[in-house]
Image (cartoon, rainbow, N blue to C red; front, top):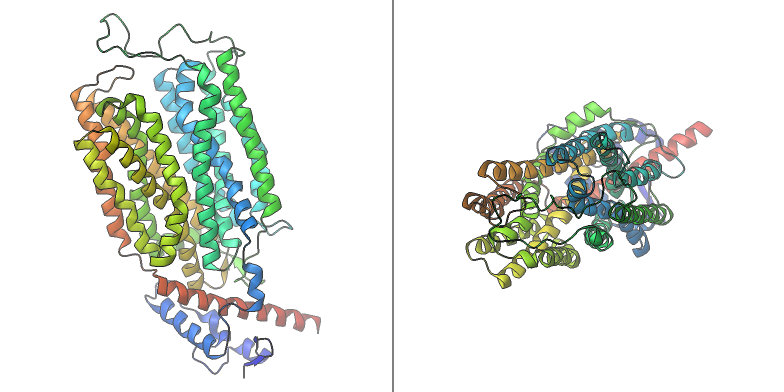
Length: 558
């Protein structure tokens, strides 16, 4: 018979553990017979009975040994800072790489778009490949995920620097930038996948993981703001301001880039090229500082739910189970649409302000307003999801849609700043909530597959893949719509069809995508109640596995 020893430790006879005996319907030794995927409702009922059985036996909700799984503020800050350099570099690339390729490297717009598209595609393809190899990694003295992040960071810095280097040759520049941009995208993926999955190995406590995610999202939004501001300040002198004429002469070009104020393409040491290399070097140092802080301040913990005899789930099998896991499918489908809507808002906001709302001189301040609003609202959203639940908090993403529609119909400066502020709130929610809800999905999967391990990277790599796909979809929709309606870069007055397209891309399309995504999220099955039940059931599972491993070691020694 199981009994409670002094100190609250659960003692179980060896025979009971071997044969699965017990006095309760779901005694701890019977945990290996947890319901398999496909048995609807079985997982939740099983977890409820396990939680009740654990409570009946006096298992405290937070035993003394679980104190090791609490995270200090310092650990959360170090974890958050470790991921910020990726956002700093990503923001600098998003805002300045296209204009660098056009104005400094003198690459044609077609080749520039080819570089950007293939680079994004290479990053997306790397996600499942990275998940495959990381899932097969073995535990080391510094963890299973940390070696990947340490190993790829120096190569990421090198590829990032050469991505902003102006080679002395002209004919091969397209191949040069394509190579290093694809390499940079692949290496950032090799960092991002284990870094995202690291959330599951910081703590077994759901609140601690949610808190670490909130710290991470706050720092990533700040990283986005720092990247845009830092790069902009350093390279500002590389670009000459041109005043837009309302009615340009017929014999002049429509592009602002066809001027004589740019450096000789054969001179890699010109002032314009130098400042971009300086900015790349500064951001490279930020990368190195971030990985040092992450390595020194964060301790990766081994899988607390797996037996030492458990084997990792094969990648293809794990991917198939992942795609069949109902909560994951609903969460991914929902935020795929929501992420696409946010990408449309972000990629077209400046164009809308410039050509459709007559706010050309204010768009840079509006972008800063969005980023600052997103950064300062992360703690607010963390409190909301703790108070009302994650599923309820997700509907705050829809806040920006009515105001965006108002701005489209009534272009106004004050309204534009208000829309920028509210959009920042919604963007913060769209960044925080999926990464906060994904660990709950992994926990739910763990409860249904108690003898498999290594599936965390499969979940995170596939989700990152879909996120990048949504970014590509958003950019593709924008480019196709503007190209179809006759958009011409550099001219002051765009055709009326282009202005109408911008209004649709800012107002109607994101609103439809967000509301459809939130409708799908209504069927997301994990609630706050089921999260608590899963937490208790996993605690029983973890302690039973610890007891089994201990008994196996004792038997071996005997």
